[in-house]
Amino acid sequence: MKRVLGKLSVWSILGMDGAAVLLSWFLAFQLRFDFHLPDSEFHHFLNGVPLILLARLFAFHYFGLYRGLWRYASMPDLLAIFKAVISSQVIIAAIVLFTNHASYPRSVLLIGPVLTILLVGGIRFAIRATREWRYSHKNVDVNLPRVLIYGAGDLGESVLRDIQRAKKQ
Image (cartoon, rainbow, N blue to C red):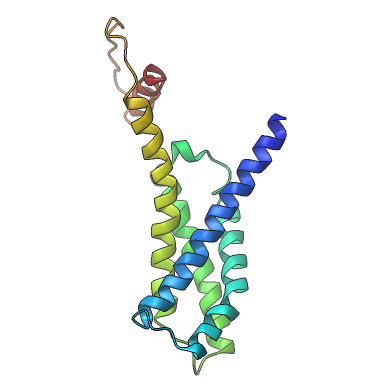
């Protein structure tokens, strides 16, 4: 049963990322045309959907966005999102510009990745923030012993976060 739940969660994460990618692509076209998308440009939007989804989701997988847990989203995860979006954008732009070079709105190729980073990163950090907020409102035992963490820089900070997280649960 646990294995099935794990697969379902991966599929739901993949679905949310796919929805975020599609929404960012649609919003990029809408922003480019001041929310009055002409029919000819809607045709460009629809033709680009399979390419955008395949390139982005493959890049997300390649850069390991589906290996970690969302509740622990951090700066390295945001960096991985950035790398995945930029690398997939290079491929998308090359394909689009070499096949539809004359009539394609180039500004969409700049707006789309920015929105994708905001939406995909925003979803992950919203889940983390919701989890942190939910556990921060639990009653904490005030009789717990105090602890001093000495040295170790990033490792010390990681230990502190684990202690705080365990204390809230």
